[in-house]
Length: 277
Image (cartoon, rainbow, N blue to C red):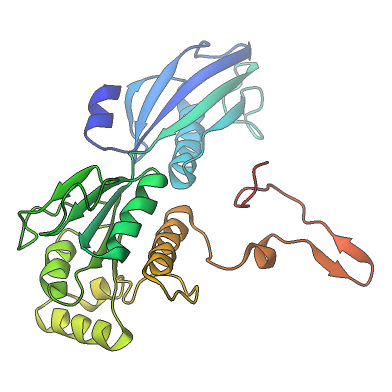
């Protein structure tokens, strides 16, 4: 089942009982597989409220992509999970999230650098353009050069699309992408060109709610001036969306504050910083 779920690109969670202290309905080593809606597809790690607690934690793990350890109190019906079995149960909750996909439509230095950065960050990268030859995109997993109408573009909830068609095929590329649609779609264009493109798409029948999700022009405001810097700004915006980042400087969100009484060191987890722990 694990291989089938993985190959189909589904999000799911594996919950494993790693320890039991006292009496519990499940035993160490018991496993369960839960899908993205919290439904148990396989196995069993306890019934009743224990199952509900595992489901809730599994949904949180899928949301932030981080595994966690869960300790269930089986002694107390009020403060625990409502199953007075007389013990504790420890579980390891492991989310399994498909490799994110980056699709770059178009060519040029921005496209080539976006592909390179995406590969460095672990994306499965597809370059789609008449000039998308392997020598131009050596870091791409897939190069598609025989798709003038972008009919071969495939998007799902784990796909991030960057359109760098240099205005020549923006409408055709966007039309193909928005019919699916992906987790993110960004267009390399000026503000005026972006407005004209979105207006044309609206006139073609695409809903305003859908068009509001388009990043046009795409990328964070880094003051980018070169194609490489523009690509960096685009990939940074994609990562901020993937990880739930604000795009603000870390010194504003997590930095130490210097006041009249000295330095105030923030408390709490360090997740989200740029330095290894």
